[in-house]
Image 1 (spheres, rainbow, N blue to C red):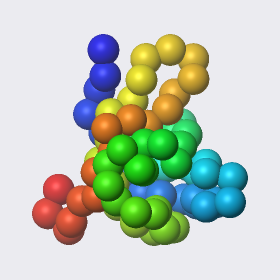
Image 2: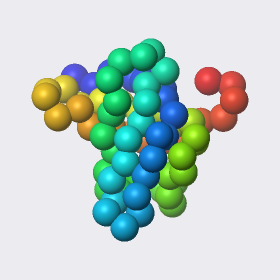
Image 3: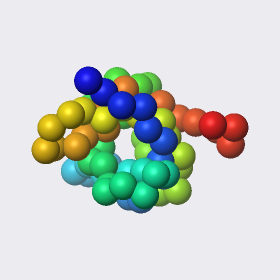
Image 4: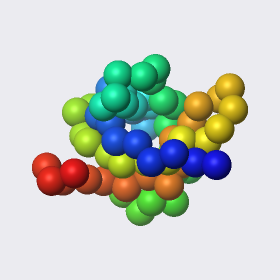
Length: 73
């Protein structure tokens, strides 16, 4: 089961294809991979960008089904 979340990109390294999202709800940071960015058709992520995402269950909390959001969340 995946849960709907929103958060802000803390960092994303295009070389390694990995970054971190800080969830709006104050929970622990979520990992994001380049494959999720590619699948979403976003192009690239930038620090400070607000995104919506689902989180996979399990001990490896990874963002999937990523999409860019606007100020009206």
